[in-house]
Image (cartoon, rainbow, N blue to C red; front, side):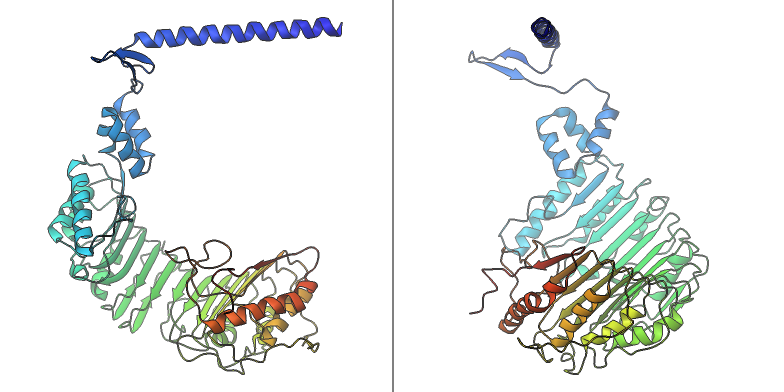
Length: 522
């Protein structure tokens, strides 16, 4: 019975396979009869047969929709091989024009020549484009600049229906004096813009943008009155980001902006006062202490980022002041140029803080005081009973603190501390300073829910690209001083000697290795 069943099964499979082959052959034959179909053989004058392929006969609107889903470079490639694709990519709704998308990132010619090549390519694309742009991103490059070209590109791109405009001018040359032509936003052309991002230009708006939800300005020449007029007539605004806008003295945010929830103000050197009347701002990113630039009702703020490359003791300020003025914080990120005072022990807590990031940089004001105690950060952690994620980044060219020695067994402990909700801890710039080793061991002993501890002995405030060290454009590690390399190796020794054995079995220890080529001790 078994042999008969197997024989019957093999016969059924052969019949099924035969039917599939026959059906496929009939389909190919039928397709070959249609003009321009894939697989059709065509005789050429030299007697050789070649295949001619064409795309399926679909309505043009469908091809436009398909091409709109492709990145610009892929759509352009498709346009090189098909007349149908060519007409479609010229109406591509998402234009991102940069060195990378135009394949100029590998050119080694002079900057002025590179700028002319870039301008000619962009101009060719924009002249051929049929309109209907949804997203226009232009990252200008090179020292050659002619405002008439840029004005014409914006007139083509900014039409009714456009949703996003990003214009980034190159640093240097004369582009900082470029006046963004606000006339292109009139007559309904700018009413659909939801995201406007301008870098290194002048912007003097005379009207609001009714659908604008995000406004990002970097090194833009705009006065407080001009910005206030724009904001007063852009009632859909949700996010305002100002960075290095040095013409703004007074920033007035009207109460009509009920949707505004995120305010970012960095390095606006002339800014003296912020009058924020928007009722629902819950995320604030600002440089320096809040007393200098009050940002409105602080009780509802749930996210705060304080960054200042020239101001010291921001961590001490955050621990001693924020529980009183921002008691509802859930996310806090502090970057301080230096810390001269250890974190104080206070009874008041941040009851809702779940994410804490502390970045310390000794490269601006002369470095940390040797008396600064990393272990005192335990008092900050204890003030956050629901804290889940803690990141500490320390950039120091020289470690001035007492270093832990091979036979040192006198570790400080603070009885009563319990970090029951802490799951993830990252320490970048880990070194063999005794107080830092003590802090790490203290966390391991008291974080009962810890899932992951990440330790990196090299930290330079830049993005880690490959898991072992920070790379430059050449593929090599960005250079760091010999002293930092030596302390990185000592940090690895301290991890192996004092930290690794304290990691509980329920948690994962992730130690980022040093680059064997670039981080050798010579």
